[in-house]
Image 1: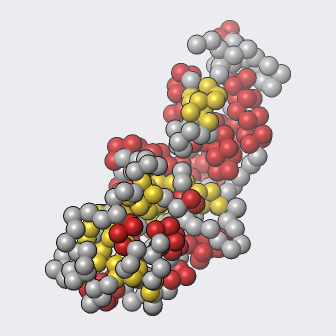
Image 2 (image 1 turned 60 degrees about the vertical axis):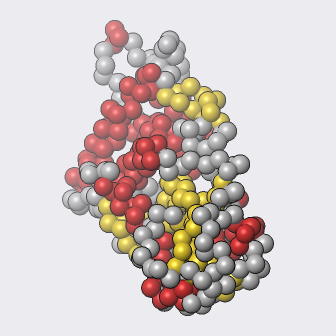
Image 3 (image 1 turned 120 degrees about the horizontal axis):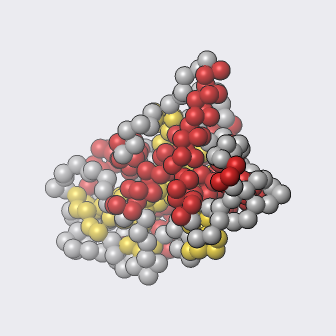
Amino acid sequence: MEPVAASAAGPGLDPALGLDVDLDLAQVRAFAAVADERHFGRAAARLGITQQALSKRVARLEATLGVRLFERGTRGARGPGAPGVEPTEYGVRFLEPARQVLDAGRAAVLAVRDAPARPLRIDVWGHLYAPLRTVAALIEAAPALDAEPGAGRDYPAVAEALMRGARGGADAGFGRVHALPGGDAALVRRLVRLEPVDAVLSARHPLAGAAVLRPADLRDSVLRYPAETVRLDFLTRFADRFGVAARAGGPNLGLESFLARLREEPASFTLFPADVPLPDDPGLRVVPLVDPTPLYAWSLVWPAGREHPGIAELLRVSARLAAERRWLDHDPVRDWLPDTDRP
């Protein structure tokens, strides 16, 4: 691999001149974001700058170092078919030292501000579906990350708080993201996990004895919502897609109350992500859905341009666990995702 020629944007790294090269932290931060995201557009959104500004920063860094850090136009690793970038051999070598430089920069700023590093605060929502299972796995896989999960009411409430940036509020949110009436363009979203969904129904339901069910098999049943129907976008999109006309909601009185009601309704069913730890109840049946398998999308969101330092570590851990545990497996032929959830 050949080093790139020096340009007017900065001096080349001539061995005769030694290694005393001044690094611009904004350029290094841009490089690290692109290396994490494998995509210039997503990295720019994460940093709250334009893609053109990001590209210029990376180009100037490459000119300063005298090497090419990325191969452009590769297949994006974070989204099927998305054009992306991959670090070159030099980019791989530079990445970890670059992160250490950024960490040192943050430590220097904290030293003069006389303030300790603040934990990464993550508000989660969708509590009936146990989002803390995934958040806990991320935190446990990053022992150096200081994170504090908290409770949010729902996505609209968490999104509003993040965009408002209230002092002492959360730095990020975790749950299922859906369209908001006023939009959420000021937030960066990163898909973390796609979880298969099961049908949960009364043991007296006519389909309770099935080993597996197709979503279309449930067309003549009543979809029971665990809260008011306007608050559960995923269930509504499922019902619209598979022709489930009968739907019933009510106040959210917690998991135990909800399952007790479902147990007594032989015509009803609901949906739960497959790994949610439901109580062992002989009055209920949990049946996998196939042909297609619905997937529930868990995402991390945070304010564009106001990224807590812990976000980068959380994203790195998320990518590693997704690869190890196949969290982002998605076959459009085999699976179903609402259009808004597609990676």
